[in-house]
Image 1 (cartoon, rainbow, N blue to C red):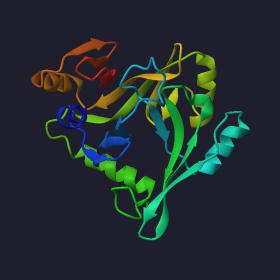
Image 2: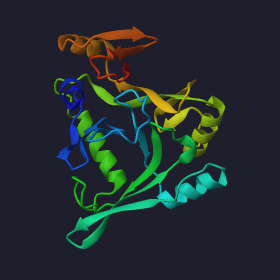
Image 3: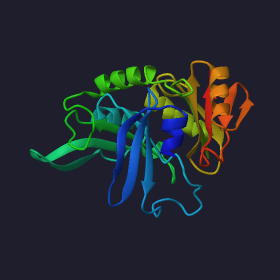
Image 4: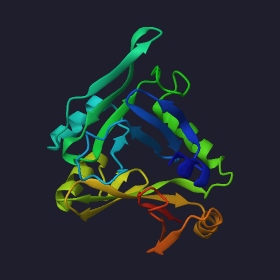
Length: 246
């Protein structure tokens, strides 16, 4: 899967592959989003009927994690208490990040949560002291200059989710982002009815859709064009629903 995103779609690796006792993971840089590829040693935390691999989580960048949670609470959106994740570093027990699960936006196979990274997180591969706004700006520039053999991806432009209650999910996401039909700045949220809350598709914006299609054909990646979106063949995309739009 890392080869698909990095070598075939042309997304730079932003967190090199790491092996831990419980997981093997890496990140790729899609500009306005970092995609974490996560190969767990066990899938016991997922519902038995979950199709693998799922889009198992959406990590949102808060202005400040505790303030963001409090703002949602005022609008009746339930969240867990923020939880800090620490590891041993040069200075002893050091903070990596603080997570806060948004319960009302979360389903059995997909967790939606705020994630606030500490600038000096000991586990992070980026320069110490780099703030999240600076890191996002740097990674966006790196993607713009890294299109060597890729399909010209500029960033994530839409998230498709299914939900048992479309109206309720729309209200929750409106509270999270302050806008209707938006998952993040520049990223549309498409909600459709379904049995569980889960992400069903990711759509990436490309600079030139015909050129992207030609590049995919060169790599023998099959596609299907529908409603202005070029969808990768799900079998070749490991069961994921990934689309490209101009």
